[in-house]
Image (cartoon, rainbow, N blue to C red):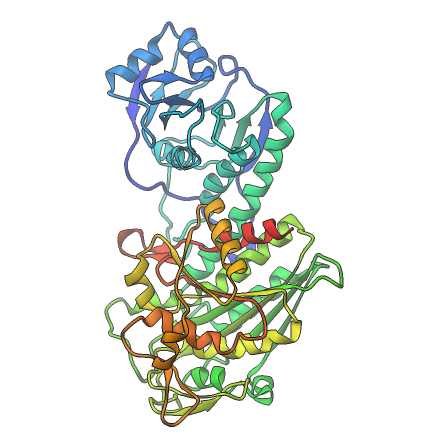
Length: 521
C-alpha cells in the first residue's frame, strides 16, 4: 500500500451541457455493504481526532494487518476535521483506493453537523487527481449530533452533485480533468436504507437548483439577457402541470404604470421582462409564498457609470433572479405540496441617449414618485414595481432576493446574506432555514430612524440615502412597497458569487430558500 496526500486546490467540476440540459450526471444509491469485501474504485471511511478509527475503518485496518493505522501515523494524519489521506492499492480489501476523512473530536459520541459537512466537502478535493468514476461511502456509522442518516445522505448528495456543473463550457477546449464521477454508493444498514435514499434524492434536487443558479449567474451578459431568463422560465414550465409562466412585455408594464422598472430599461436595447412563475402544488385555498428576484442581467451603473475595473462581474447582478429559477427547479424535482409564485424583474442597466439621468423623477406602479439621484441604485427601482405587482397574488409571505448593495458586502463580507424584514416571524423562519441549510443570513435593522435618509425635496422619496448604512436605506426604500404583506429582503451582494481566481456564482441562497419552503410544508 502506498499513500498519496490530498491536494489543497479546489476540485474541478463535471460539465453540464447548458442551462437547458441541467441534468443529474452523478447517480446516487444506497447499499448495505461489507467494507472489506465491497469492490469499488474508492472506499471512503471516517477517522476521529487522535486516529480513532470508525467501525468500517477499523475493519479495513484489521484486514490489512494494521497497516492503515501505521500509514496514518507515518503521514502525520491526526483525524482533525478537514484532513484527508488517500491510500492507493490497499491490501486485504476489495477497494482499489481508500480515502480516510478526518471528522474531528466527538462529544458524547457525536460529531458536529459542521464537522461532518467539512469532511464531506473534502472528498472531491482529495480525489481530484484520480480517474475515479465511482466511489462508495461508509460514513453512515458516523453519528452526527441532532441529525439523522437522512440528513447525512443529503449532505453527501448536495456536495458531490455540485460536480455536475462546470463553468468552462464556453471554452473552445474545456480543460481535461481526471475526476469524472458518475456513481456514488452510500453505505447504510437495512434500517437506515429508506431514510438514506430519501436524503440522497433531496440532496440531488437541491443541488440541481443550485447548479442552475450557478450556471445562469456565470453566463455572460451577451447571452443571459432578460429574454434569455424569460425563455429559461418557459423551459422550466415545459410539460410541468404544476408550473405556469407568464412574461409581461414593456408595453404591458407601461399600461400597469411600472415607471420605476421601465426607467432602468430606458437605456438598453434589450427589452425588459417581468417574468411570473406560478407553481401550484398546494390547494387552491392555500395562499402562496412569493419569491421576487432582481434580474439585472448586466449593470453598467447607467449614467452613474461604474468604474471599469471589475465591471465584468456585473453579469452577476441577476443572481437574485437565478436563485428564484433555481428554487423553482428544485420544487419541480421534489413536487412539493405548496403554492409558490416567482416574480423576476429583468432588465439591463445601460447608458445610451435614452437612459434615465440623475435627478429624473419617475412614478412607480404604487403611485409613489421617486427622485433618481443615482442610476446605479437601479435594483430597488425594478424590485419596487415587482413587489407592488406581487400584491395581486395575496401572498402569505414575500421574500425578495437581490444583489442590491456593496454596503452589505462591507458589513457582512461573503459569509452571510443580509436579511431585512417587516415581520419577525418570517425573519426567524428564514434565519432558521439558513442555519439548517448552511446558507446563513444575518438579521439587519429596519428601523424607522433610517427612513428619513430617503427624503427628497422634489418627490415622495429619493432612491439613495447617502453613504451611511447603505444596505439599510436600500431595504427601507423597498419596505415602502411591501406594506401589504409579511416581507423579507435578502441582500446577496456578498454571497452570490466569488471573485479572484475562484471567480464564479455560488448558487446562494437557493439552499436557504428551499429549506424555508420545506419547513413550511
